[in-house]
Length: 230
Image (tube, rainbow, N blue to C red; front, side):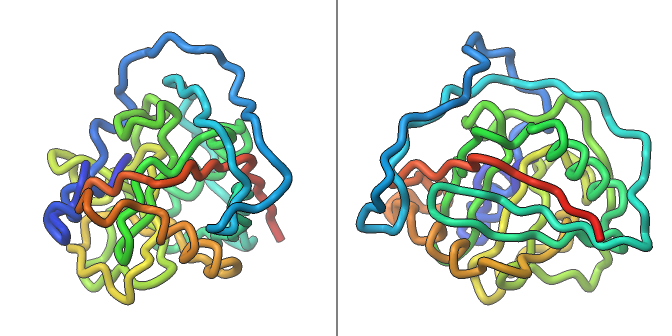
């Protein structure tokens, strides 16, 4: 889900984190081919220029199997602006983590974009349609503790304002502010443990004049997401 559609800058900003309907989304008629044209050279922002992937709603089965609490699960997001690694937090969000891991294994995030980039606040992705309204067709709930804070590098799940605290679909956000000052409403998926510089680079690629809408000024694509367990 999305943070909220656009949180207010912390409210628009706040609202933005709420995703537009977890997983609902209309079934957009589009090709399943998510390959993109790219160049091998880096642009002024340190990214490989890419075309906007053609998005389409996807529907997946809700996973029933929990992740092994004795293992450490990392998800690497390979983007055209560099890679970053998310360590899943099975303690704060066991159901959400299992869902996210399942979606990674199903290549759900491959070829999707960061559709919302609010400089100094968050970067948001995980929507297969690229519009801010898509999801996997199901939701999970891991209500975060009242003491939860959303600081630099924290990865949490977006939701609509109408959904219960801790509700998640596929849309996630990474905090680029020292403290986003959000209420404890968003399931904490984990934290970036490697490549935070890549996250911060991506975090600069939003139009500051668009406020909480976070309109990207450059196409940032998750080319491949991979899962490892140790």
